[in-house]
Image 1 (cartoon, rainbow, N blue to C red):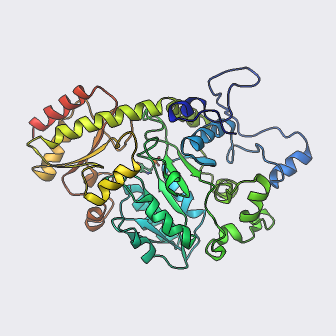
Image 2: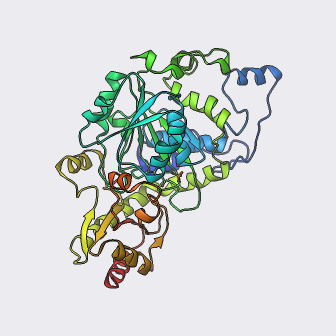
Image 3: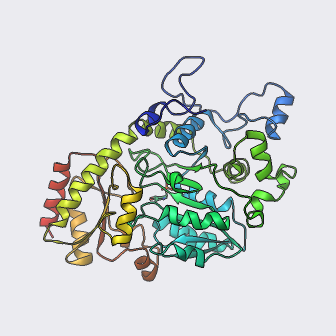
Length: 433
Ligand code: PLP
């Protein structure tokens, strides 16, 4: 059920159907730390298992605390339904496993998080799923790489390290005609970008980052726009249109709209088939942590972006910095995309290349005092990392460069501390190079 909230500041606190716990009247969301749920009768139990009725069965597949998180993020992203999962990695894996089988392919942007590249280049390959890489600087590249076995397009709104904003609407439009849904990982841009507004079919997040915000829990989520027309080419999507023997021949593309009145076969199949079989479940305790994070998300994002802009300006004029990589420091094509898609802030990730390359980068990181040197982004704390020796180190040199990681690249995730303190720390570390 949709709440009366309309803006992200309000949705983060009031979104979804939860107002209070109906028995005890608690206003903070209770943690339903339970594995299973009492059935009313044998008939009720049977109906729930055969999806004639929808309700709680077992926490591997659904949980009331997770449900409140899902409802709030659904509203935040202008979607129709969501599925929370155990990590951002499992969100991206599920988004592909839900549509692809052995022999299929996907077309992905070249600009991706290192962990996603590992999933695509190794695990998906071993499952017989091919990933074709399209340079997003020409959206038509996606069309060129599409054939009858292409099941989806995949990209990140603001991928690091390149920080080139993805042409969401341009690629979604290509996919619409070909019946190829667009999956967008919006991890680095909650609140400031709404990919569904521009035609993304499914949005995913690593909840671990900005939504959690406090660096204490791992989680992920998939949001279904409910807008994709899966019937434009039924042959392309057998997982949606072929009878599912594990549910007595149910055809998800038919059953779901009939039962629920909404067009969400993707997210329902992901829950009742993949969560059932693979168990990528989010713990209710972590869902509670993310619900806390959501309450301040919109406020934090404003501060993250404001600080990042100040830090970017400082770095641009520093004599030891060779290049500053930021969503607005790209060529004309990508700067226009930043203008079009990022509203109310341009993100809080900054890349720097220091004069002195690899050695200078290492020295800089080793001398930071306020920044944490960690493999994370989107924390309230400012963070720094050297991708070539960490997040992207499992890639070949060629793939690393393709992803935009040069040997001296340092990634900063700007936190919500006072900007003066952040700059002082950067300045003293730069002085030591
Ligand atoms: N997507 C992006 C853009 C990320 O930055 C990350 C992690 O850094 C992930 C997905 C994976 O998320 P998780 O660490 O929650 O599995």
